[in-house]
Length: 153
Image 1: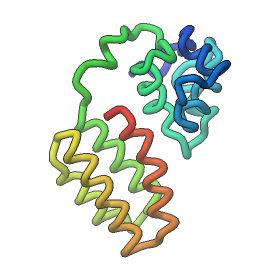
Image 2: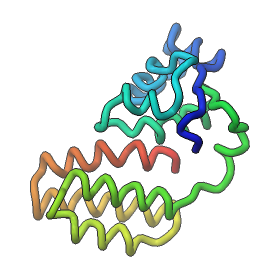
Image 3: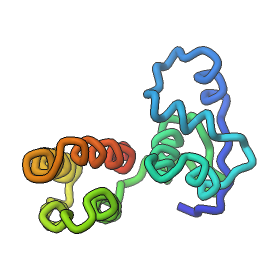
């Protein structure tokens, strides 16, 4: 995704903010609120902070028709998802959250099958592993940070 691309709310996105009729998830709603029609993907990511996967959530919002991203047609978001890229993103999140304790989780993620179901299953296993071997709060943080990356699946 072009990080300099401008993001705009669609009519559907505007309506959802006014009425809440479609029941958009809280995390997605927060990102949708950030969209002002002038900011780029990169600027929105900065506004969202490091704990949010703004880019992943923007993709999910675009797939749902709530936002449009300049230069990207809706078909881009309906095409096959790059599982390897998502896995790489999960590895980076794990390394950031777990630091020196990330080795086993990274190995598990790198060995994940390149299927939607395989990656979702391994991500759930990683949370359990962290909860058992490291710390419950780290497991919760890992899960929260990975949800945005996994949302595009």
